View (cartoon, rainbow, N blue to C red):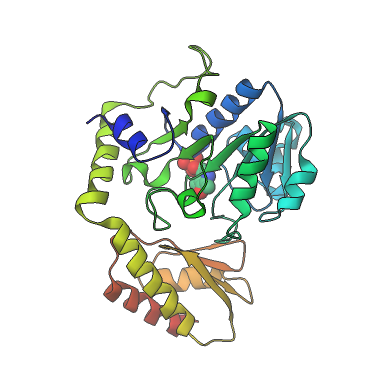
Length: 303
Ligand SMILES: *Cc1c(COP(=O)(O)O)cnc(C)c1O
């Protein structure tokens, strides 16, 4: 079966556009929301990450990233605190085109929102005909234990963007949208030369097949829960919190964590530190419990 059909059948969306990266997917999603509504304000969240092109940088809720480029930053982007529905309500105006959120913030420090946060955004968007965009560039393709993380919150967004895991390492991105919203684009409104080439689509097709043939989601859920429970057993002053979903896991430290990234790399483990104090672990979705044990042992020694 062709890839587009196969992927769409697994989601609540009707149409797909192929891009080459996460930032490019988010650019396209924002253009689509603006074209659909004819409005010009986009609400996104503090500590979000949506990419490094000018528009996606403007949507990214980190003032320090904007600073060197402020003379050319696009207007119309409003950042409100994450997981705060009242802040979104206050930021909405007659000119709001879209609300753009990550279902779980990745770069922001593995922030899992309250159960009803996305549902409330969906309701507001529905009521006011605002476009609800989820950025699943990091959370998508099984990372959080469901094919897409918004499924965990039982919502049907208007647009979803994806990249990172989509091609199992082959550079690709994409936008999924409902028929209603997608119809706002007419030929000439958007395009890209390399998007959806046969090589990347073959890779993406193989990735989707692997989810079924190798029961990837079962592994993500089982090993992810095990991973979090093992981390919670590390009884250390320096650990302020352990959190995550599936195999997107973080521990918040009581102090900056950059030095531990270097030490773990020397011990053979690649991790990163986000939001200054959060060590983030996003291992391969096929990781085993034995490998988790090796990692937790090394982490324990290094901390
Ligand atoms: C990585 C990331 C992006 C940007 O993707 P690129 O492919 O690097 O352009 C956008 N949104 C989120 C949530 C990401 O994690």
